[in-house]
Length: 516
Image (tube, rainbow, N blue to C red):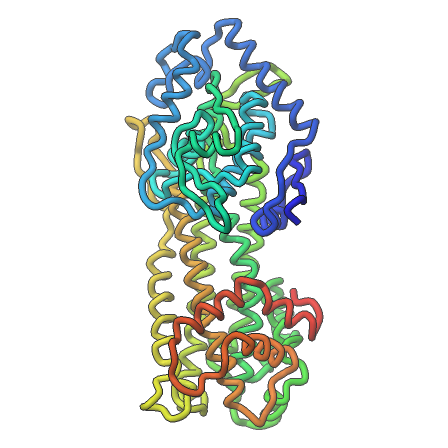
């Protein structure tokens, strides 16, 4: 797998490509057509310089200093100072997976041929990426307009041997200076030419990277939540009536239809469901069970929209100014403004907070013996044992935290650059928060998974459906039944790893066919 290649050409990237990039870590190459496009774009910049024209970002200052003309012999120093001054990020480093994705997405943006960077610069970025060098990028400092200036500046420092990087070392990574990182892989720093500093710094690649990383995790979690929710419904002796296709069809939301179908597939021929099908034990379940198709479905429909926004963004151009080689023009605009992806990231945060919120309510039903008709907190010998009592408290804490994090960032703005940049998107924080919420949601669903498997076993001698039994048996390979109190943290960590691996979907699909 390590020899697999990802070639950037004329074909648009998809979320599946990003998933493969993150999981497989392929070598990345540029197609011949893309390489030619980059060369032609650079020729426009060289022509402007030779003719002595004044163009923003080529031979002028930046932002409020756009009216200041820079001498030809100072253009390289202008770009270097731009990167150094803009590398003003603070805080802990961006997670390496996401920092690597930022680098890849910047290469993709430059490959479109509207930035005027030299092929030599793009090749160096490719060499850095393919060597496994990961730039150290502080998390904080971007307002998401003029692009992600501070994060991308820290990435750009590597081009001339400044800043810091993580480099492969044994089974892990070592943090070294930018100069040392290049030296270890026999890569040579370059002097930035006119326009190049701005080409690398302008763009929404940090927002994109956080958002796309989050989307990959979210799509897995949303599908997994159907399986875990089905296990809980089964364990709580819930009715499948609310999942009847006729009910969904007359409302006709695609996500709702898909979720209900998944539940019917997963719980087909369940002995537990059959045991109370014709009884009046429960006429209607609580909303957290009965309304799963409506809530999970709405989340799925929202994800479709969010995916479209981020896929458009990563295949679009977010630099400024932009080079149009067909007319030899360089035009200044506002494609760097992160509003489209900021709003999508906020939407992602909201829907994933809701996914976790509904899960927590289902966990609570399993804890309450008056509702579940199972031992309190899903453990025998209660009192001596606390069972899942505090695991539920942890889930509740995470859901409460998510409610605060879900407050949209994109409704905020603060003027910067002496009011030149007077409206910003706050998209980078929106995307960072979405990533945090998704990780919290994974943990909440992990608690529900642990509780649901325990509850299903407490229903014995009744047997669960084949699909849910298969998930239970697979989890039991690493997490035994809770007989008496032990270190809960380890079980939660094992369960969340099980969720993130995608194994739950694989196990279920082997039994009942492909889920939607």
